[in-house]
Image (cartoon, rainbow, N blue to C red; front, top):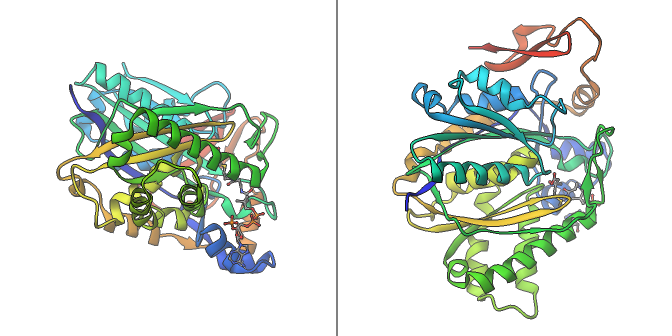
Length: 396
Ligand code: HMG
């Protein structure tokens, strides 16, 4: 059986962030609530030209080679921050990166689970077409509103990955377990600028679905579960996965070996490093946690099997697994990750609030998005909207 999985993976976050201690003070909240209680230090803040397509193109451009452009058959773009109900964000990426014309490009949605739906579709396609590749993208802007209950759990960013046969980083297993439960924990009707959310309930539902999946997985694939060295979680804030692991420890009746939960805990902190500096990136959050684990966990070894727990409000969850490939460490860059995070500039709270209120006009005619291009960082950005059509440009 041909191995299929993640051959390359990278991320892109906006050029600015807010310091969570400053945000806490501005909101008259004890900073430890944000730092310890939810586990966030910095929150990525996109400026107006950093939309989901610009962020996605910046991530994808880092991993897609000229040869890949001829071999990619699909560009799958997962997002819940789409700016168009019809035209898919993937079509822009297809053009901006110069992918071969006979590829198909489409968008996928189910809250934060959409990224995993995209990855699993890519996996199935490459299983059947092992000579070909799929570019999977997750890009989102998490917005709850100034002074809102979810404000400290905002963020923004994009992930790009290449799914291929004989992958160099992680070969995915075919056996996965998913769970659906029609609930209103977090949802955004098409007329709403920000989501409706039942914050506490959403965390409870997440934990409950994680537990249901673990119990069922233990029945169906007991050996595989006990093999898992670590689990990466969808991290809306970095305390979330910790709460799940704690719930396993606190369970009275569990068939799980306590050493197993201890082992998962021992890798948890490293999987949260990037998330603590970025916040929630919705579809990409699980994959930021995976990149973080691969970058910062010195104890991971090739041949080990790791689990990934995906959750999307509404709600769908899935536990899937993969095996770390020989030499996987040569294809990830801790230095690159740190450089990318440390290049960002801090916004003070009044600049963040002013930026938050900035919106794109929906007038007819030409709208220049960026007034002063001298201030832009290198990379793709949203340049102008002309007759309701978005056009991008690149600063090299
Ligand atoms: P809140 O009411 O601001 O906070 O809501 P809290 O009062 O629940 O406190 C949070 C934690 O801080 C608690 O710890 C406190 O004890 C602790 P916990 O009991 O949870 O372990 N705390 C302190 N710790 C140390 N020092 C202190 C201190 N004070 C308090 N001084 C909430 C927090 C996350 C609910 C809110 O921010 C929110 O609604 N966020 C948005 C929803 C969300 O992120 N839900 C997560 C699960 S749903 C999901 O993951 C899907 C999602 O990504 C969307 C999608 O799928 O598309 C959101």
